[in-house]
Length: 145
Image 1 (cartoon, helix red, strand yellow):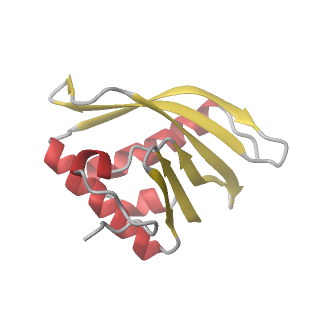
Image 2: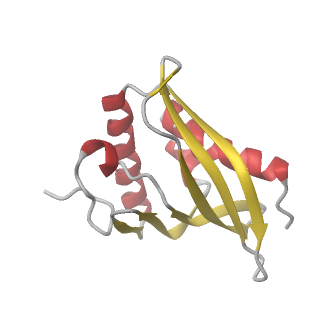
Image 3: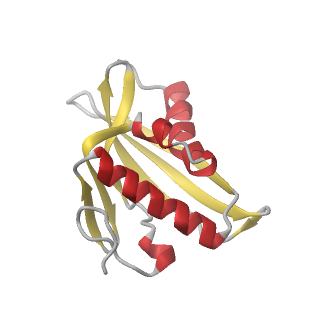
């Protein structure tokens, strides 16, 4: 399966729009379990769809707290790997009423060809919801008590 600019555009839409439309089905379609989020505060590994759903809900809470109404993901580039995977790198911008609400950041997703779709097993330099909420998640994704 070939990864190209059109595939990259579709992937970015599918990992962006769900947080604006609250459509976890579209987000889940791009996730391959176990799913790892590597953040500056450490890794978070989601093993089940239930953990993915809970983590997704935490992001929605953070989006609401920031009153974010737009996420723009900008392609940086992608690198095909010898094992058939792809590392796709992009910038993320979070906005409220057209005003940036945090500095843009760069992340890379490890993508695998899977049933005609590119699914991610990991995001490196993910901006975790704990960045906004001030609570670091446990390794399985749920918030610390």
